[in-house]
Image (cartoon, rainbow over all chains, first blue to last red; front, side, top):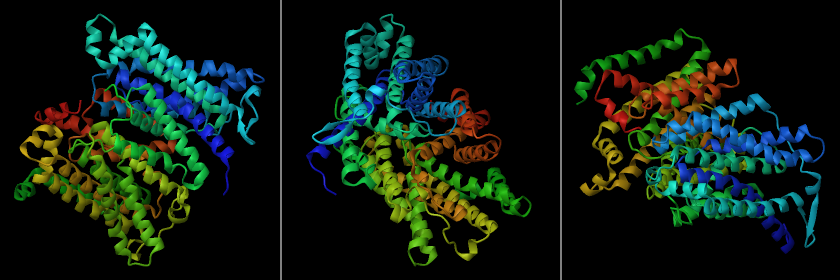
Length: 293
Length: 319
């Protein structure tokens, strides 16, 4: 096994591009955890719905316009599903213990997972990247897929958008305040229930965006939610609960250790991120960055 | 103390149930014997989790790993080594307990959600290794056709073996939970700060609870191998761990026998609803949603609440 600097850089970039998808999903999960204190296992299932919806929408249109439409419509669909779930079910349970909420979201994920099976069936699905992003470019002589480059560009844009939302808009500021002291926010005459609903929907929307973006890079299948959500939870924990930048750092750690694992010891590549997580948790049990809890 | 138990009416009821279960294989079809045995194995697993979750108050999120380690330990001993078979059966629970000691030693430094997450990451580490180490563990194919002693060759014999081990384990668990050790665990669950102030080494007791619970999970793993003669990497995946959690929730956290009921409900759903439709998890999910909304103390806890007003307080803590 030989590799020069070009392969190392390429693998690093592949790791970063995968981290970007993880980051978008984890930022949503972290936001929900921070504001609503719900450890939402159904988040992974919403991500899966986003990917399946992208598949269906892409197929509806000829050429590559379908993918761009899907990129906008699929996350909105996910947001609608989550709004219904929040207003019908979650909003009655905010006072419950975390453990109960965790199991409740697991129940939701079981239901949604089976609904996906009913709607889309159990076969593997695949989405091809739009013509603009097909093929690969050459970096120092090694080839690097264009789509991954696109992901590396999109990730920071989403990060900036979330930052602008939470720091510059009124609703973002209110939800940050609700994360710290929800009773005080209620005392100020703000309808906390709706703040929670909006925060939940935005978090789930990000899961949908992640699902739509991941669609061309993987085979879309039932069970993709299970592998993702556990990674997402670990990332959120090592980053610091409710901290968006923590989610970014955690995702980079997870994605890059995995991609270098693929390079050095492919058979045990999936082991490396877990080792990194264990090391971080042992050294900094409350996460690398400040947690809002 | 034990004299009171023997003469109480509950002892008679429980003994009667077990006698019925003992003679049942003579009358029911083979398939039901298999399902019953599967329920016993799953019950033992759920009970072992409930020892630390319901009675210990720990967020033991990745209990399935210990079940899997127990099962893999016996499977590897029986297929890869030439040691006597009974050593393999003992190796399962011991391997699970040692894994529990190592993982628990790291986890008890943290509390609640952080405890659970560290356990999930350590457990997933073990899962990832088992999942990928094709040469040793068979990877995602698992190990099939594990040879069994001739004594356990027929299904009925396996059934009796599993039932007897289950009864022994239940008695042991009952004694452990009623012992000063068990009472201390429950006291730590209810108020760990006060326990610390009284001079109890909270972490050591929690670690002890984890080791005991993982030992029984290992026993359940061995029994699974006895019944199925195969092991899969999915046994160590976190989804199974949450399913065990659900069984405890369905049956009731703070009851001794609740998890048995939860395990029976889950296995029965998977078998009988799974026969008619592939969407049995949909039914399970809806049931779970209903239980969380209307019976937060679980089915068993609900009935206990009807008959014993004192249990309501215990149930209140679950909210």
